[in-house]
Image (cartoon, rainbow, N blue to C red; front, top):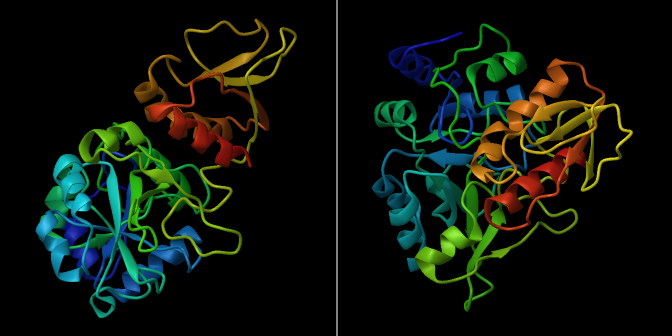
Length: 314
């Protein structure tokens, strides 16, 4: 159900949840200072309580009262990429940030989205927690219809059209145990290692949570972004194959197969924008199984796409 900015503001002030567009994916928004709204997000998504939320703000200065000694490189990154698809996990003054929102961690995640409707709303509401607007573990929503598929046609959505990035933000963490190289990538996203290197001159290491360790940020669970359809990742597709293929418009596939195209295999921005749309389309068309062509380079944004496909097929 499409709503206006003022209707979204009213609902959020009443501890309700609304779907909000960003440049990456749609988010489920509630006020950072409305515990009932935060509880509703976890219930709506079926989200584990140990999975922290990202706090969205309209201006970098809004996060300063919450912080404890952030690494100077974080400010360089914020200046370079905010507003944009970058999330920073920073040490915080714990009593300033509701424990539920940060999953009782001593850190919190912050981002400034690059979407005019999201920024306009944030200027009215103040900080919002805003995880992706989907059932936990399923492909994220990149348009209003995806939100309504997961939560019903009467769910309030601030409609901003199709998300231009289509992949979640890259999440960086300040590692207190590594003084020499404290900046780590804990979720690959729309910004690559190379993008970050150009700003700080460091190839940030990609790290994953250890077994039985609580996630530091969204997207670290082993199976994630997954459709109901079974995905089989492959670099070669048999000439005799007659089933569904998730592949690319500029490649030839068996004549009797059915292609769900991610776009041009040489254009990672196109693939990322289409990825969740295609994964959701498989379920919409009741596809049970599909081969996924992963014959693409494992570099830059392609690496994020491969990571998403691996998690979606786990």
